[in-house]
Amino acid sequence: MKTVTITGISGTLGKALGKEYLRKGWHVIGVSRRDDVEGKGESYSELHVSDQESVEDAKQLLDLNSDLLILNAGQIETEIGEKGLPLTEMVESMNRVNYTWPAVVATEAGNRTWKNSLEIIAIGSIADGAPSPFGPVYHAGKIAIHYFWLGVGPIIYYATEGKVKMRLYRPGAIKGPLAWAPINRLNEKGYKIRKKRVDGAPEADRVARDIIKWIERGKGWVGTWDEPISFKIFKYLHALFPNLSYKVQMLGWRKGSKWG
Image 1 (cartoon, one colour):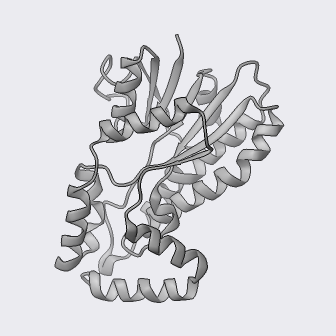
Image 2 (cartoon, one colour; image 1 turned 30 degrees about the vertical axis):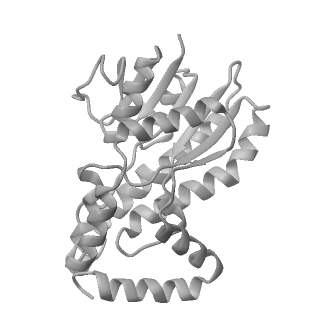
């Protein structure tokens, strides 16, 4: 029986991934910072409790000796300060959860000698190409994990003689309450735009099946859910014309935020 370890098992996508792998007959190790996660037998086989902060936490995760490791845990801006400012504590926490600790896990994997192969899948976001003042800390962390994976992945692959493969999947919005997090920065006009996108987003089960299908095909290092045309425009604008991109974000904040 193959084993998959999934961080963020208590989240919407984590549960869906665990459920699908159980259905396929895998042993699912769910990872959470809490020890009271419901769903044993439904979304995971056993629970591994971890603070997901230190190098030691990373070593313990890799000691589970899974065939597949999905770094799915993430954090979004559910609270903000006055005038839409990111909370200082949330900036530190989100960057650690979304970028720093997954990067430590991958690097530690590269330091080991592996008899069997290990595939590490980072769950990124289509937001990694489109910075925005409406979810700046989240977007920055996802940009960072994408850059790290693409930059360090080849090093670790050859350092481990092909035993550790780092791949990344970029899902978009998933229908559910967490997809509404940025609304605390939006005015009525911005809210309507966000609502339309969230209402049209796929269910977590559908996204999980697509991710697993992509993993199993084994083709391509970066998988991507279909991007809205607006994301494609902002992605290329940011990459090709950064100064203009900044001006557009300035205009977007003035037109779409509660404080513009």
